[in-house]
Length: 437
Image: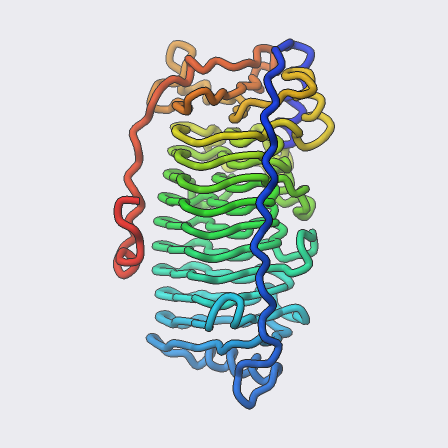
């Protein structure tokens, strides 16, 4: 994204676009404060330190089919928990009642690390871990329900990277959960397949919800606010799974204007503050029926890996496809946003293109297309970026041509693409998803 910023600035000298009206800025909705949890250990007769040992022992001794209960209380842990047995359920009494606090953690890279399948975790909170809060690695049939992950000191580079973090998983449901304060992504699903992320709240993270190198995901009815970027659909190079096929719909993505506090070198460190939805180097993405508002840089950004600013640093795999293709944006409700972009360069750009009181269009696109796929100088219809969203406009900054011919040409994107079918999770999770969503 940093490179995109520079490219946009280079465009200034070549353009004299008219100023747009500045839309009213809505006041960001205040988050729902989580009530403090009980302070006593919920493990009868065990005490805070005792419950740590009790829970870890239960996880070590678990057998398929076990249900491990976490009683109400604020339970202190100074080292990571782990589970490697399939078919286990970990259940608390509520995300604000059963709290695993790692504020004094001195050992371990996560709060809870799970390397198992057929795993359900529900109704508890994981707070203030040194690293990731909940990591589920290399499993299938995963349910994460009514879980809160939070760093209670607010946005801080020293916070753990990921809150809810299933990676290399299949058949995954993340629902009705809350993620606050992650220095990378609050809810991150990576290198996975067949995923539903619904009815969650992501707030005060660098990336609220991120779907990365994942195949076949539905992201709906979530609230993403006060993050740096609200919802991200990314493909990163040098990973074994090339993601595609994500639907982002019926979400509320507003006022994601928190300054970027990611660690230096993290991919999300290049995300401009004030972005609602970002698609980067990913294909077959549908964005529809969302309420996207008051994201100060832009409500939606479509970009290639060439605009991320770290390609030269890390390189890319030979078969990596950096171009976003088959993107369909329609029927969203846009308001506000784009009036106060992140950084002096974008602020200057916005002022020169649209006037001191204007704003960027709702959608920014860096303009990169794969030259090998062009037919008569254009992408074939099946690879296009289509926008069917009323009066919403998309600004093409013309990055490949040195920003010599930027502008808005909605006729070039007046098209439709086949709509993707809803994600249907496989048994036994299929009974937990709403049919026809």
